[in-house]
Image (cartoon, rainbow, N blue to C red; front, side, top):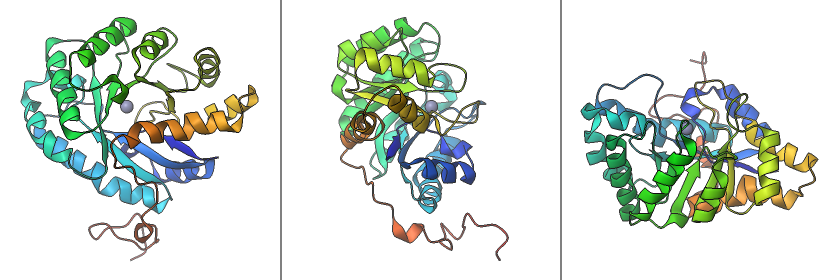
Length: 286
Ligand SMILES: [Zn+2]
């Protein structure tokens, strides 16, 4: 079984997680830039973070046989802090980098005017850069958030077929499907979707344009949820082709719209003694 986790924050995870993910079948992932759990206080901290998602983290993933790409953006929550506006000025240069396969996570947190502005600007940047967009739907007022997001997309130059609406659930899937956007579901241990609810959604709405992710980060989350959904699908009577469509071909098709997906691992980086800027993931050797 081959698995592509289209939304996971590996910066917050350990090398044990990389090893367990590889053993479970994960061979590719996309790491969206996001909020760190506490507010950043200057744009420069974003740039160091973006550089890590483009450098150190793909290097680390390659050690465990996993292809790593990222999405970059000013996240919705921090779009409300005027000190960080410069991030949007620098973002176009970052979007030129080979490993960036979408603009994201963008979207709404509290649905403020500042978030409207940041979303509109970043949808335009995605269109200008020839990239799709990963759009987070808010945790509160979910359905209103999806409708407002779809209106912003309709008013933008980015075609809806290049938008992945993430963190959907039973209340928002129909509106997302109707729009023509790709549909992302984050499966968490105790909130949002679980494996059984995910299987029920797939039964009702089918597997076309559906992506499943673990969205694992620094909070209570599980980087093996993609595999657990695959197993639940098989147990519920879905065949291996349906599992491969949801867990591999759909994410490849969505992010492949960037023209930048490289699913072969850089062998030079998988050697145990490999170094990135003079550093390795090994400890205690020297
Ligand atoms: Zn996320």
